[in-house]
Amino acid sequence: MSTEIKKAENNNEQLHSKLVRHSIKDWRVEERPREKLAAHGPASLTDAELLAVMFGTGRQGQDVLEWSRSVLKLSGGLAGLFALPQEQLLELPGVGLARCMQVQAILELTRRYLATPLRDGSGFTRPDMVKDYLAAQLRHQPREVFALLLLDSQHRLLHYCELFYGTINAAPVYPREIIKLVMRHNAAAVILAHNHPSGVAEPSQADQRVTTRIQEALTTIDVALLDHFVIGAGETVSFAERGWL
Image (cartoon, rainbow, N blue to C red; front, side):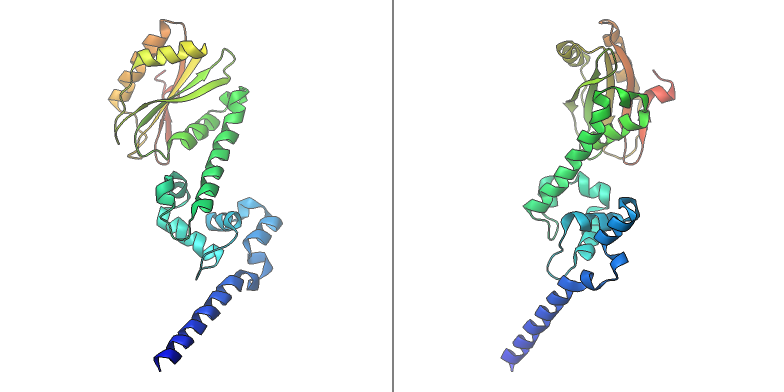
């Protein structure tokens, strides 16, 4: 009797697996992620549908869209997914090394895309583009990171550098190290940036004091400090827009 039950259970599992594998094909054409993308463009897709297009297949027991939704739920949404380090990505059910590398590649392509107009100088006429670039670099960091954008005299990006690292709520900042880096790259202007792992972008008094110290140090070598951005979970604060620089 137990053998018959086991056989029946195996048959049910195979049937379920077969149904799952073909379930998206059974949907109406306009509801399938790829067809929806082709017909209406990427903006018409949900986050889960975009992931489904990228991943292509689901996992045993889940079609690709159902699985993509579960990945987003477990990681805390799209921002959470892209913020996960490799070891945590690999812990998500169904995410092997290949899919982990897909996520990492998409994030790196985004960073490079956002950097392109900054390197030719056109991006610095649009503050939101600078914010997006810095957010892509820093928002996912689990600890506080202090970074610099080094610019030439035409305000083109020469170099992005993450210079100081700290605990979850602090990073030591040394103006002399910034001066060394500026001189090494012969930069004419600097933009500062750091993240707040707490998610709150509001600059602290310590942030303002450090910014003043760095500005004074840069003045001695005739280099302009254009801005200091503080990256939070969903907001980026600009010192220049606040009138602090």
